[in-house]
Image (tube, rainbow, N blue to C red; front, side):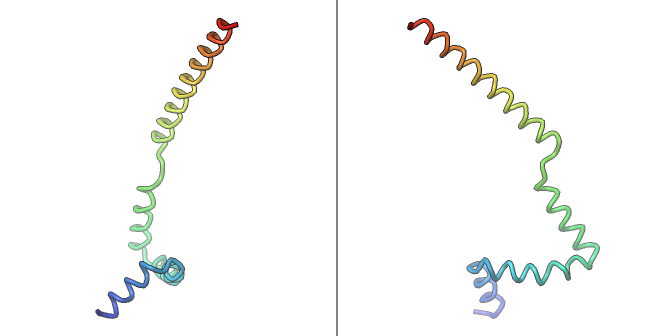
Amino acid sequence: MSVGRQLLEELRRDEELRRMLAEELIPEALRYRELRRTMLVALSREMATKDDIGSVKEEIDNLRKEINSRLCLLKIESLCLR
C-alpha cells in the first residue's frame, strides 16, 4: 500500500489526527483567495436561509395549534366524565 493510502487510512481512523492536520492546513489555505471562496461556498450550502427558518416557524406554529386543540378536547372530555 502506498504511503498516501496509508495516510488516508490513518486519517479516517484517527479523529484527533484529522483535527491536528486541519489546524495546520487551514491557515495556509486561507492565504489563497480561491480556496477561501471555495470554503465559503461549501459553508454557505450548510446555512439555513430566512425561508428555511420561516418554514420551521410555520411548522412549529402548526404543531402548537394541533397540541392546543387536542388539549382542549381532553379538557372537555375530562369535564364530561365528572
